[in-house]
Amino acid sequence: MKIKAFKVEGNGTFAKDVPAIADAIKSSGAEIVLLPGNSRVKRSAAAAAMRAGAEIDTNVVDLDVADGKAVARRWVYRQRIFTAFSRAARPWVIVTDPSLFGEICGKVGAEEAAFAEAADAATRTAVVGEESAVTGGESTIKPDAKLLFVAGAGWTKKQADGALHFDEAAAEITGFLAKSGASLGSSKSLVDMPEAAAAFKFMSHMNQVGQTGATPRHQKGLSTCCHGEEPHVVGWRFVNERRAVNLDANCGWAQGKADVVYVADAFAVMKKVNELLG
Image (cartoon, rainbow, N blue to C red):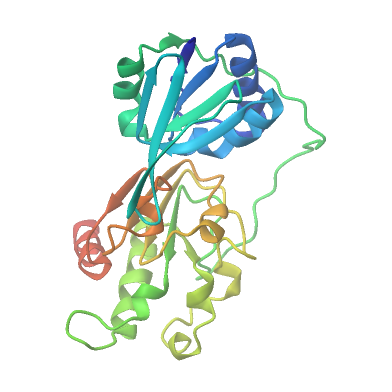
């Protein structure tokens, strides 16, 4: 069985990566193609597989090949069930957990192949120029900021002492925005919460990311107190580096949607970050 692995790293764009990955799949002649499940690959791999006429599975944590049959394994149902499955269709694109990519490639003896980025990509959109949005004054929406800071409904929940801390949450969020120059995003559940409106006057539906909200294009994203479920993460598809802070180790962000997940109290983390920023 011919298995090839493409180590796709760094930054890229959907428009260029889709044809590049599709060409890599088709030109490899491999029955199974392995890709690392970083944010760049996950953004483009599904569309590339469709263009190449291949089947695709993501979040794979193990792969066995014996007697011409490949069996992949991954967790489902919030890591409560460990499943094993196979596909007859070829080519089969398997996107692994990024930290296990090298181990899986070595285990199945995958042949490493060079990934050539597409120099030019066909597009139906003609870009005639760029113009920054006017975000003067105390606006929290900053399209040119390198960092997107997203707050979720967890900021408005009862904390360890059993009490609500709306004002403290608002102070930590606005303090970080002022010191870091980050742009502010929000989950839909937070901007829809009437009881938090008084303390979070700096936030509106314009800050919403994902679902029916905006799709920001910042270099880095930091999510705090968000579940990281699919409708929300869709809004992050153009963010290259994704990190999250959440007390729940099984939250949606931990399921391969973020590059780094800090299992910690966002109140404590952001308070310390603000102290370090001075």
